[in-house]
Length: 415
Image 1 (cartoon, rainbow, N blue to C red):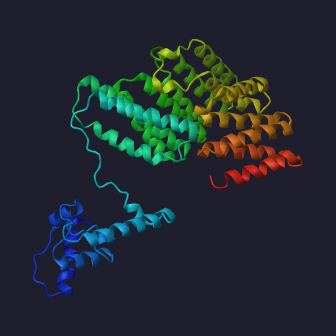
Image 2 (image 1 turned 180 degrees about the vertical axis):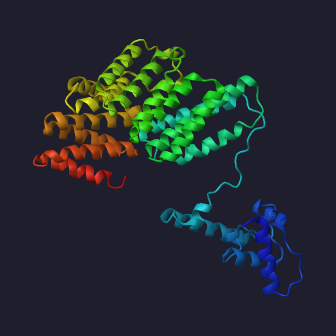
């Protein structure tokens, strides 16, 4: 209901159910109730009408409190009731009433003027959430980063210098990219596409070629994952336009994305050439020259991404040794800060060995991949485990493989 609609229903209830001769309330009065400017409507008929209209039994459920100086005992009862409500909430958090208790009533004010400190805070938030995503997956904190992005977007309406506006656009775009990638990892694909497009707009408005390249790379990865490698190839090639403006690490990342798209398209010779281009670019990498969001792209990440590209060829009998070696390097090289990448590379390696090598060895690798992936809230990681189980079906007579398939089925049943 709008405020005016609520006011009219309250007035109607008083007219129909009482003989009270009191002034009618209006939308302005309802607004004061919502904002807490009126904490205790003095007229008992208005309180009764509000309770009836909004479907509650007590005034306290509407947030009404008598002045403390008059009713200390009742305040204490209300406090105890609040604590009991919280106790119920811990056991039954799905209750709409309990959840509503945690809605924002006093949101953080947006500053009218934005400077370097606000830009730094947005960047710090993007880095923090990006680190969490790489370690644990995006499933658990996606709503939190979305709320942070909503606030950051409001900063774009504040006053700032021309230089600060470009920096702010880049920072907000960076946060938008992190938000989009978390959505991608959680299979909220429409959300991810919207966030990526928004972030790309920020990067282009800011003239930030580095951020533009990163966002287009992620858009390519999502398209490839969703079965549209042709769009993935388009995005990666768009990002490689004016590659002279990009650092060597960024060029390597984009050539790798292009290789993965070509592999999915079964263009084997071009895939191998794209991997070679990625290797050549990475050989000239100077991490000190990279933007902060490229810190993840180290030797382990490069080995894993190129190994993924060659995996498409290896499962068909080509470049098996090269793909295996690269995936092994990725598994050994990834630390805990890249737990998701490590788990996905382990799973890909196990699948490759299951198809081309010893199923017992593959089952051992798959067991390690399962242990690595289980704590991570990533639907991509879970689906890779399902793919491994599918390849393992051909070796069901092997006890180790049968056991692995059962463990995978249990682990991914709720993901």
